[in-house]
Length: 239
Image (cartoon, rainbow, N blue to C red; front, side, top):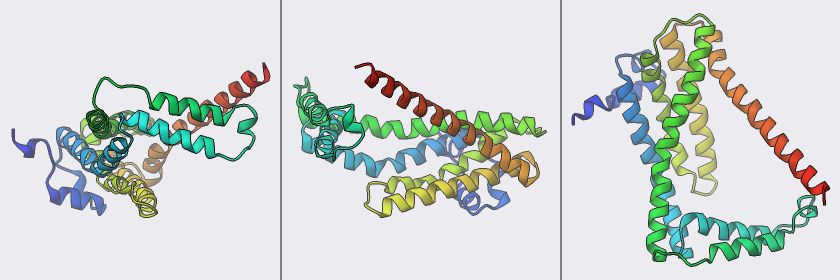
């Protein structure tokens, strides 16, 4: 297998993250797909090590280890409006009970497999977001009069994954949060620049095409949260 068929050149990636027009041309969708996948793996490596250590220390699979940690936080949580509807202490004890259940695999092996599965999910999530969000942006581009084709669009916007490498530093206290926010903002700027180059739309229309799907998803998320909170209050009021 020739890696050149699956990855853009380092110079292309460097030009793209520096917002140079030359970085968004002469790249195939297959190369961008390979780039997004590899960058997702690289970004998830440090979190994989942290997750593996956390699960190994708990002697269980990663979801159970996280459940045990969440149980401790619930039991230590101060009383507030949430505790008026939920017994946080008993809920924490229930989580501890689940986390301590017997497993068919040795603890260290279950910890490794679950952490490995979480690591593999990194590039898969990136690919899913890249494709779904890109489809929404492409629809907005068409609505604004762009005539660009799908493959060049995805080939160019895939370079937005490069700044997201900074998210891989998220387990580091303080620095992780700053680098994650910086990586997301940088990735958005690269994405908007790539869309502008591919579609040849005016900058205002190109930026609007990138923002509208984000606002749409944000509104849907807020509505879902509001519906969940309403159902919680209705459920709690029925007792």
